[in-house]
Image (cartoon, rainbow, N blue to C red; front, side, top):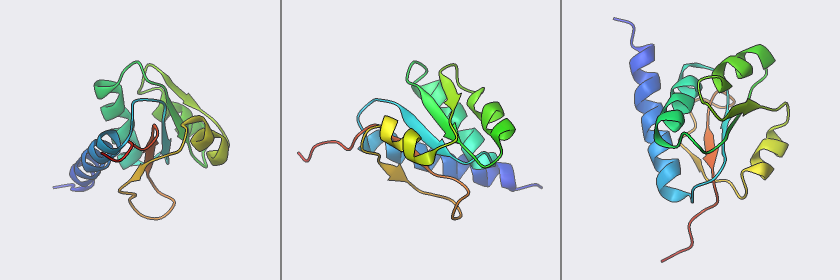
Length: 111
């Protein structure tokens, strides 16, 4: 059994849930184009279809393909620009370094 897809979906679900719980609605940033990143973009498309998602990756063609999984998906070459656009980011559960993380909206104010 190939466990990579199962691990990618499980990790993406946990990261996406955490980010959406901790952040206000708004633009999201996914930094990576691997299996977990694709799962995160797909989940964001299902949960927040109207909110833009920017995908940043080393391979522009892969970033475009990953962004295409979301109706409001787009790409940029600059991580800094993407995160700035997403307002103060809330990151959750990065996979391996430089492989995948998600940032979305601004942190919620303390209660």
